[in-house]
Image (cartoon, rainbow, N blue to C red):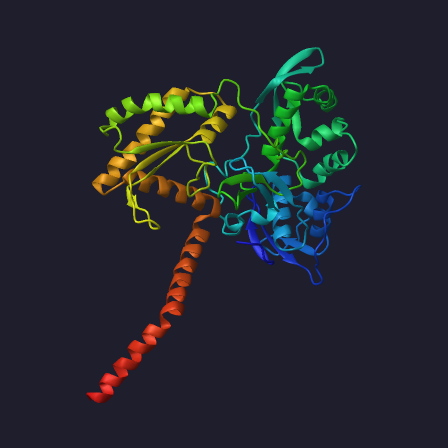
Length: 428
């Protein structure tokens, strides 16, 4: 669902707002320095776009919780009133270039339908907790946590202006605009600002991650599918954030430390295969085993596969009988290892056993595991889209299928109808 004004939204703070374009509203391109994209969005909310509550009372943009403001930035972009820059990155699965405008890909239906009740996607940020961080010097002491507080759009403007400068200078007002109200047990703004200003990279990065989590709803993400291989990447939206993540990847990613090359990986797979086949009750050679070091296939949700199973079939081009096949994907294992090393031998055996279980289920004529996996993918998609929008799309798909059926078969129905009328006329 794309935003078309006017509309009513339930926002992350729990506040419900009506958003409508005043007469003469027009598209605004991303602002140039010294103004920021944040200021461009605020200018829209104080000019061409009207905000009101359910009672019809005007809502001042500056009073918005910053989490709500960022959702409204996506709404403005999808309504064509606020520009959204392109984000370019390389697909992690196949290395093809992917281009997107993230805010235009966000699913807004849960906000419009008031369905912000998912225990993970809509879990509120804990503003009471002391969130652990790497050590920070606070005066003469050391702390290892920060506490954040909700921040209004008015309060955030100090941060937006500070970020527009060539280098970020953290003073007491900037620390407050970040929402950092305590470092350890220290709550004095000036002392907090000094602690943040001299934090090392690890500590500052950890605090930035917390700030981002506190300021942006988890639903503000674009699920971008690679046209080349079908893999899906999650991209933060809108593109302009206070501390945006870097999507650039090296053209040739170095091999993860400790992970074997393609030949070494295949040797591990072959070594594990005999015992795993016997354990599954599958005769050696009954199912071909392929170790694939090319671009991995992906599942229906766009996740790169560790392994796959294809039942025995007939090649449609040659008519030759093809045996059942289990395939393991070297590059997916390597990518997982790069994120965090694991027991490679155990993961290979588990993947082989999983795919052989699909083979046995296929022989039995029923594969409940495959059905469960597909249902899980569909359920995850529905969580992001929302219950009501999922139903709407299902209905639209049925109508489209029916319309397509009518378009392609109408000559047949015309002939059948004419024949029926003719038979009635000849045999009254």
